[in-house]
Image 1 (cartoon, one colour):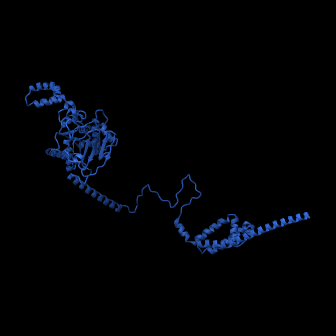
Image 2 (image 1 turned 180 degrees about the vertical axis):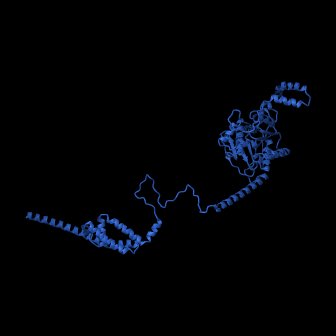
Image 3 (image 1 turned 45 degrees about the horizontal axis):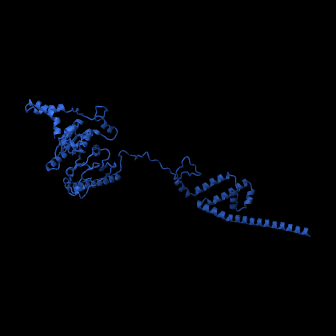
Length: 514
């Protein structure tokens, strides 16, 4: 310890000469004055957080999260209380980050002292060697942000007496004398982790556990909500499950490795998830690991173990499941009530209803209109089903439609097909009908139409169609047969002419030979 005391001898001698002239009553006053003169000045406290961008405003960058829509109300962080257990390589960085974020209150627990061997990973300074970690951390953090309230406990929480104090501060350590908002566990041994787990399960306190491996290249954080997620004992490490005293595993002259980079990464992940939980933004990860060798960040969701050894954990699991069942029943009841309920307007005498603007009237047609760039040969118009049903059962309507059709046909000059059709119906010869002019043909057609109209006024459309088809079939048979006989007669006449010509030529050849 000589290398620590020798640099302080001049200051100790000056203090000794200064205090020699004072009595014991004002010794403490002189000591406080000397400490104030040697310590750096602390800035005045800021009553309210401001988003005003000024060089003198330490909260302008933090309040920008609200302006950018990440956090709804960042000022709420001043109402939060966080417990940090273990002010070592991870815990000291966690406390510093929370202080810079402007947390309302930090309660720190640790029983270790600052050593020069800690300088590779902690924010402590060499002149703080020998001080308790919680006191050295408080003195440093007060100069960083005096707006934060600090409460320190230099004790080992694994002892019976200190464990009760630890639980009492979790229940009543908040700014409003209520329970704290969250607990962050940054210890380096399993005994302390089990103590924290037992206290949080007993009080039903939400907490986040963290740890760094002995080779300093990996770590993890685990969010624990008693009853809903797994506690530390639900899935314990092998050493805890085997009931091995970890103190027996340590050897003299052998220490665990530590890197400030790995410590800072785990501390950053821990505080980030704590802020997301406190300020209600983003998604809190249940279990997040870190492997520095390959930059791998695995995520897992660890469910509680129904056979957990901690009785409080099993009790809280049962309570949580009962609450979930009640919530499901309540949701189903609300859904049934909403389906059965109908909105009744007392002043709505005429039964007027509101229709959504997004709806549109359905077209009566069963066909969908084509796009403007497509042209079809036939596009059916809208169908009127009611009119069709009426017309099918009304013979007068059928006769009227036939009359309109015949009136249109009269204005059209007859073609060959029309001549043959009406000739077949009237029983005449189509070749004779063709010889007549249009007037005589139209007159004949009108007579046939009047005759058919008189006969079909008392019949349905189906009977008219069957009558016409039968008539055409009977008279068309004669028409088809006459055409066949004409064709046969023509062929016979042509063959006879060929025979006569050939015979005449043969006779001429014989006369010349004679």
